[in-house]
Amino acid sequence: MKFRFAVINVVAVLTLASFLTFCGDSDDEAVTAPETSSVSTPSSTSPPPDTTAPSVPDTTAAPTSASAATINFDCVDPGSANTQRGAREPLSDSSPREDVPSALDNRFDESFDPVVDPSGIKTGGPPPEGIPTIDVPCYVAANEVEYLSDTSPVMAVEINGDARAFPLGIMTAHELVNDNIGGVPVTVSYCPLCNSGVVYDRRVADRVLDFGTSGSLYQSSLVMYDRQTQSLWTHFNGQAVVGHLEREQLDFFPTQIASWKQWQQANPDGVVLSRETGYYRPESYVRNPYTGYESGSGLLSSGFQSEEIDDRLPTKERVIGISFAGGGAIAVRHQYLRDNGVAHFSLESEEGTDVPLVAFNISGTNSALDTEVIDQGLDVGSSAVFSAEAAGQQLMFEPNEDDPATFIDTSTGSTWNIFGRAVAGELEGEQLEPVVFLDTFWFAWSTFAKGTDIFPNE
Image 1 (spheres, rainbow, N blue to C red):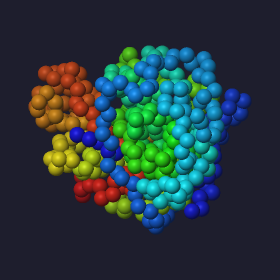
Image 2 (tube, helix red, strand yellow):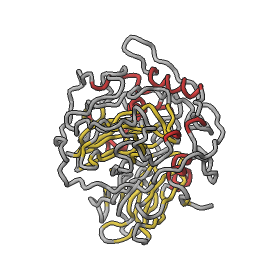
Image 3 (tube, rainbow, N blue to C red):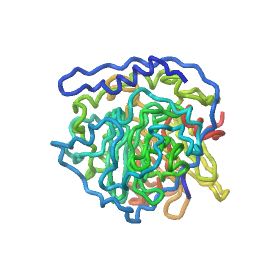
Image 4 (cartoon, one colour):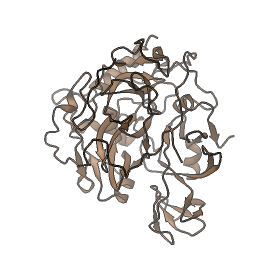
């Protein structure tokens, strides 16, 4: 099974500029971002990119050239790499810079055969690395973290048994982290405007890439650049859309946004991305520069969106999006999942068979895009998607009335947590196969997954 995944509004530019300064430096006061603006729907001017999801990478294969994972606990001085502005050179454990035309410098270069209309890629205000990528991530043992509340949202990543949490307060301010997890070179990415977290395998096209923020957006979604060829890549589906590597596709690792309490209980020996980034004041990472974006009905700016938005659902409704390579795509309505805790559905695979899936949601996780202080934000819960098969049988799940943080399968009565692990009962120790999904806004999912099904279809 494979998973694939013209004038800018002045208010939006000011908001993104505030994004760079809301944390301030060690001597300056933080700046509060303006509230988001209401928007209208622009007309379509360019075709969407390929929306098929990438295959889940083979984690047993050795990295092409990047070194095996080592966890950096030296948070005293993470170095100057995290603070460099402007296009950066490749990391030492990645492939070297190539002498090819740069889409970062000129996306209209005549040698390119772009996947999308380059005019649909809009500057967001900041220059390349103006939103600074974390290239020297430092970690703290889970049992030593005191600054996260029980409901703080974190991106949960586990590769080859290496479990790490990435607080959204940090990810909103930096958007990209280049690292090795479980011996695999990866980029952890969070796009605040489309509210989606993804994890890419950096190995592609016989290279080990590393990524930086370009300062541009495509359909209101983060655009990255690789430092080897300076091709431009869309965050949402991990595809190179303009430049030397255009049409190359990154593979995704499953990730989910969970609460700090949920993640820590499931991963007591895991590690957490440190606030000591060398860039912003550590205490500033509790703040949200996009105050009110979660509850606002409009986009940050209509100027960032050149595609018409599918009007079957409200623009900013939260959905859980899943797509299979060569198969189907579906958006599970977040409110339905919040109301019911469990959603059973199926999705057509590349082979034409229906794959039974299950989505979970439990309360207790704040939105990172609601109130100015993240830990006071709207409770949007934690969501996850898995194959509904385990131990050779298809399972049906329901919320556990005795413990609202878990689920019961009706076949064996076993208890399962939000990470798909059986924690009690006949199947204790079993793990549901995680499925790559995006916990995102409808406008983003429907733009990149044209014609998506909706569940429930009411």
